[in-house]
Length: 253
Image (cartoon, rainbow, N blue to C red; front, side, top):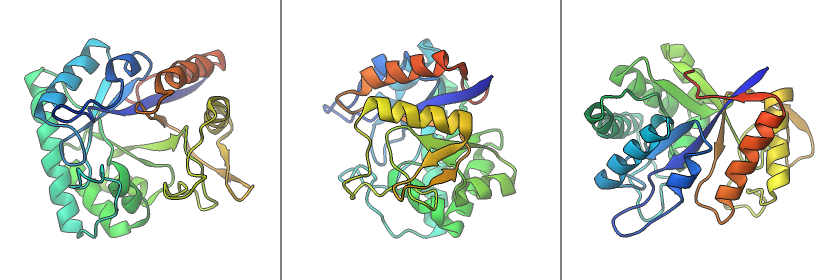
């Protein structure tokens, strides 16, 4: 039987601003990527999200992003590898404190947004991020875009890695995600998104925007919890995966 982890970016509220449906989404995912305050989230939101995930039995990971609250961490910022190392160590440390306070260990680290996409192609940046994760805790699992430079950097330094695929994003022929500033970047049809995931997990292939299949490894699937149909989609993808005889479990299980 095939196995897959379902992860979701959570803890993205900030101050009086509430984003997403964390409580509801946590009923359907197996891993939670919790924002660490740079692109979203704040200390109180981090604490609440950690506790909420633990009550649902969901594994927790740090979701470090670029220092860009205004742009939600989705704007490319020219940072050096040393700066990338520093901000990743800092943000992992922040979430680690809340995990330790609850008597639990963190499962993984997944960079957010622009930092994630930059590291997917930039070897120096990916090496710095992998080193940051490894030096904080070599037992942490590094999530990265399937087949990316970040995955290669993590494997080279000795981390366990998880090749990540996306349910609601379209792909390019080089295996990268279609940039969000392009009209065809997102998949809005739930059935189409679910079919794409099942095929990636069972066949190891995804149909690109160029109309050709490319091979892809799928250890964990990202679903987003902030869209209008997020909860409906989360339920549908979980039920369809299980109906397709795909075992849905956290990456560390």
